Length: 437
Image 1 (tube, helix red, strand yellow):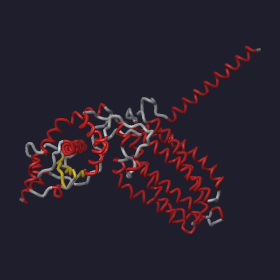
Image 2 (tube, one colour; image 1 turned 60 degrees about the horizontal axis):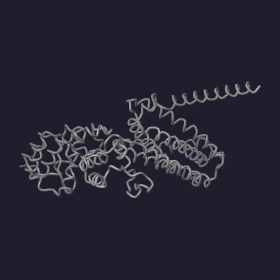
Image 3 (tube, helix red, strand yellow; image 1 turned 90 degrees about the horizontal axis):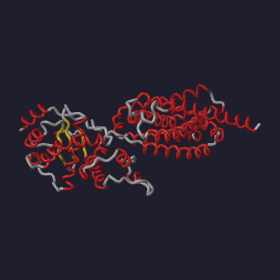
Image 4 (tube, one colour; image 1 turned 180 degrees about the vertical axis):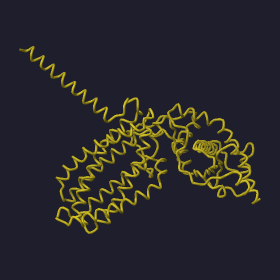
């Protein structure tokens, strides 16, 4: 008898273990890219987990906001359906205009995707908050709904644009489509859970604006905390002006290229410095020096990429000296009124922009560590001048820092930046300078 019971327990345990393994494999195949974890980068799982929780919170807020707007439009009080529908369409129609207008700023999202994504999340929560307030001001349904709709539309555009940047970085085996597809599947799971929890919460709050706002406040805190943690986990491997300056500054100071994680941990998410301070318990980077961080901040503040030549140099002698010095480069670099001005040639490539930023970093190093200050442009272009010395160094060292950067995990084929639209064609510029002379 005992043996038969033990056999039965063993069979039941084996069945449960087998069922658990099958469910685990099915979940993995549906929600994670094939070949995980080798097929994605090391930061993918942490990002996905935090995004999953924030997705649930976002849907709960969405349900509360939708319920509040339905009450505001009068559907719970027997309002005329046609009037309600017209108000709803008006609200959405005005809101969609923001998405069209904001699409013109797409390049901004590539340069600082984390900061823009965090801004989009704040914008989305502000929109939800406005929508929850609509029952208190039903006569202002259309204007409040339009402002909230504009905010949500703008947020959705920024979220979609920046999501592509993140997914491209996660695809370790160039499996972009699969990473995107699995990300969408994870989002659907979060939305389904969030909608169910949101409906349950909405049944508790009903038409009480104060209860809805209190619940929304708690959910929003969870939402933003998870968002912040998810963005902090992302390790962008592309180089924007700040990350590139941090890498180049550290290389010039110590001869070493910092790791992807160290640089991403230092990149600010907020425009206000005090909000970017690390807590005492957070791990501080070991390689990155304080001087490198200060240099990166100073360089980005003084950088002007895509300057107009006529705004930077007025003397014919200076123009000809710059043309001669940079005749084999895709850019022209000089300093004007305390700013590092990079004039891009018509043939300039993203690789030239990255090289020009390395040149800027070395000029800054000469200024702060060697005490070599700006002279006249013509003198700086002569042998032994600051621009000539720095360009010679850049031509010698740029490929070395690129190679070391690739070993450290950086994508060093371009600079992700938003230059001004000015470009020069040397023949036309030279002719113009001769005519003026």
